[in-house]
Length: 81
Image (cartoon, rainbow, N blue to C red; front, side):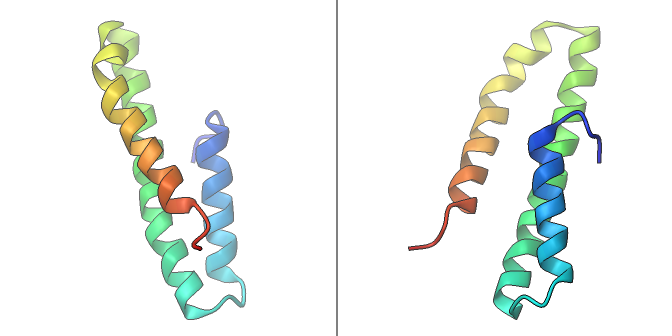
């Protein structure tokens, strides 16, 4: 994981800690699912950054989908009531 994106790096660390700790099976399953999305998030961030180095319009084109992906992630991470 790249250290430049604090959100992704922090989420990756939290998920791996939950997976390796003595958490319940349900928590580990949730952490594993979340970890897959964190890896997607990091890859998407990297791809957008690389595209933007070649074409500045790439940020504008990708921003809506990227923000929706991140917003859904925050909802998914919200504590269950």
